[in-house]
Image 1 (cartoon, rainbow, N blue to C red):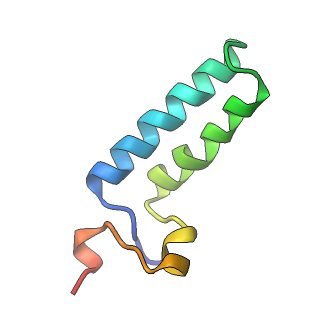
Image 2 (cartoon, rainbow, N blue to C red):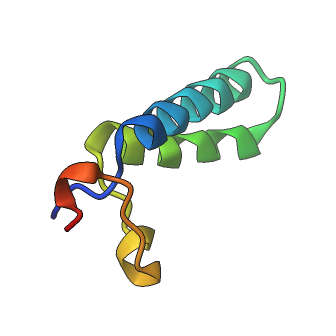
Length: 64
């Protein structure tokens, strides 16, 4: 599993995930907010399983 999620992408994923999970935990957005776990985990791990399927890579260390 190679890293394919770069710095700014990781920051945005983790931030969005935390916001969604926080809103779901407080009952503001309902159960759909728990989908925020997905961007939170992909940002924390640095790998998005969808990226290789669509040919994307935002990690500068793996380009070239």
